[in-house]
Length: 399
Ligand SMILES: *Cc1c(COP(=O)(O)O)cnc(C)c1O
View 1 (cartoon, rainbow, N blue to C red):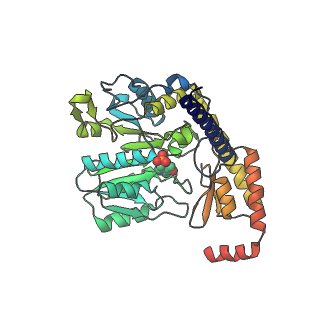
View 2 (tube, rainbow, N blue to C red):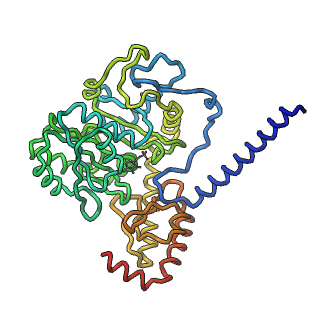
View 3 (cartoon, rainbow, N blue to C red):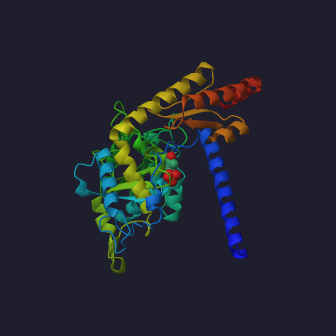
């Protein structure tokens, strides 16, 4: 074996060793994961078939591009599925695309709103995802943050008050279906009524619903009120969701659906792509589209119905286990997010919990088993019971 070959072989071995270690690290992290709204119960895909292709859905999903390795046809299928889920009456009246993430969907929604309105102000609640204040900074939009009620949903009285006070010329209202920390659902109908009453009709407003997690949960909850359900029968203009949350694909991505009339206003033709410039990004991940397409084909509407039902039961079970042990636990209606006081840093790290203002949450995604809930509850109660006196003083001071 020549020197060069040997070096090549050893590098190859090292690569294998590295990959094995990585794989072990991922398995370990997944086995105790509770904090992020990620569906880690992934199907085993026949990815090698497409792994050798650079799949790029360049340009507009409806016009495709001159680049041949693309899946814009599958993307349109995916979008039609979401259009049905979010109750678009006529597919032709809507436009949609697969993008990089829920964050991109929010930025995109805010951008479209800014382009179609004059002198818009971005209005969101204090519990809105951080990508919304960031969108305001990127787009140089003035913004207003509205207080939340005790459940973390937007306070419609404060919405009225602050709009009357600021008198913006036009409004981009970003509502949330499932806030990040407590999974609160803003009441879409109440907010639309408030804007109507204050004179912000369709010509002076744009309403985006951030449904990163629960945009893919609430439509599968038969008992959910239509007032919190992201759907285009309501006078809203766009909805976005994340692909790697409830949809369940192995890479970050997202979906945005918008009323087509707005897209027509912002479209410009790019001659060298033989496409239209309607998307925020130029190149877009075709593997993500392919993954979502396969996922919804295989899992189907029924699959998500049973997932959501099971996740809700597991959340209720977890709430019950902690509540029985007299932990001040909180769960919003139709939420798979269970909120409790922030535990020790060891527990936070082990279960990868997201924490904010002394609160932490666990999210009972499809991969979370009752065994994992039992394991977590045991760890949590052990921590809770050590030094419980100081803790109760702390809780009193906080409340
Ligand atoms: C996760 C989340 C986002 C961001 O989505 P990414 O896909 O992670 O960019 C936006 N809004 C809410 C409410 C979220 O929970």
